[in-house]
Length: 249
Image 1 (cartoon, helix red, strand yellow):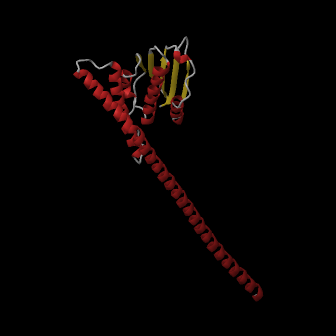
Image 2 (image 1 turned 180 degrees about the vertical axis):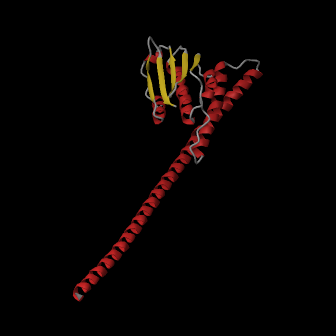
Image 3 (image 1 turned 90 degrees about the vertical axis):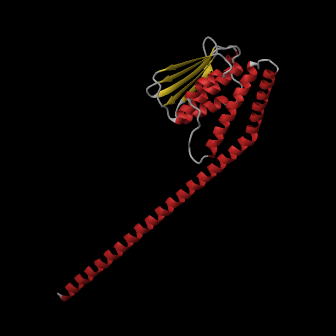
């Protein structure tokens, strides 16, 4: 009997010791797991901070390159155009429409370049001031007769959608001026329930040929697809060229 009680006490003590060791091991395992998770979070945070710092440095480098390579040249064009217009008026002549267009376009280019540089130098995701509200001014200096139509009820748009829509119209009209020859352009903005549709077309004869390879169309497509949209560009019937972008709202 005493032997049985002794064995039971021995087993009980063994179970207690085993339970104690189990609890201790479990606590150690959870502590180790928390330490590993903490290290993983710190490593991920460090990687994010490093990537963010490199992105900011790259944006600053691009801003410097743009400033050094473009700002001076565009400013010289603006000044020279202004001087030419002033001399024409001084001599009693009216400056040519082409000269005034160069002066206005260079002023707008300087303003947009400064806005872009400001965005690149800011440590946030703020967008530029280019949006559909600036379309009327863009159409006035487009260089081709342009019809402008808005379908649907105007609604506030996300900044990136608003800017992308403006840039699509801007690039499409630039291509009309360069490739369409004698043409009339048409810009139609359609506010749908779920998406915004931007359509720019022309009735020119030269624009039916494939466009010269460049970054304009590529840039438009990249902008639109980055927002989850879709862009089509190609010959229209019976003539001309059409660019259509569908942007989610």
